[in-house]
Figure (spheres, rainbow, N blue to C red):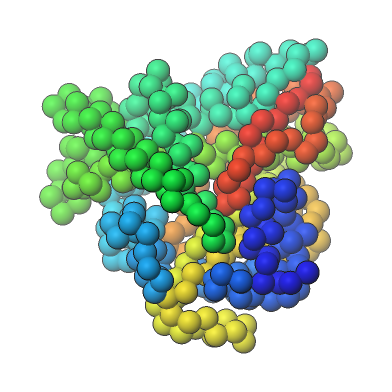
Length: 399
């Protein structure tokens, strides 16, 4: 097929269950391929790694030379900003989250996460049919991020409605009329931001030890977030704090149920779980693509990419590149030297990665005893619409 249609085919919902043959086609045709809409798709590991570390590549959508959508004229959250502004906001967000200012916050959650996973897994009795997403993979990380931020758990359904709209509006794909989707996403972001700002204001005089309290009680004026920055940052943290982990856990269980030999290996040797999580992040990653925009004309693998052009980095393709990984299409929980793109790379490396790893390891440890005789009810399962954050919407399992 025409390689200029690769992005359209990769993001086509019909290919959501298995986009990996298309990534192989991309690497064979490229590793850099211009698309019909004028964007460039990059699928090679080494090219992606170089671009993620190249200061001439911008994460800011306002760097595009094409006319910006209305939401792209406003300052985006720090995930889509460049240094030094990105680093300032990232540092501010990190202070109540992890080292060096809050070194014990994530480690202190290990016991709670282990207990929560065990409680959720107690319902997994032989003979029952469960939905791994609704009954386990979603409740775990959303409960944890609610506790971290200080969001009342009873308000979670409201936040999930906003999250669904925001995530849908952030998807990657060629062309098409996305005006209504984008308007819905902007409205959801504004409403969710206003809700979280309201919670934060309640903590200003009555701090409760959570991250919202930390943000509004920051003593250093240089590191205090403005109201707009606080809204954008807390929305980002809530969404990023559970969406990708849901996919990581669900993709992990799906992978293991499809490979009973590897499932049995982990049941016999649970000490391999940390390596297994890293391999799942490589083999079935929760994040498949990221956009960057060159600030100058760049030569990448012999292709000149013009300044201001949209460049889609196919992270999931890079993590299966045979030029970097031995037998990349084989799931191997003992794989050494596993420097994948599951959490990105460079200055935008996911700072929530330590928490996601703890949650995924605890989840699999709690589930392994129940999966020995389990089987998939539907394979492939129904997937989420989003091509960038790829994972099953439901995963029915018969225990």
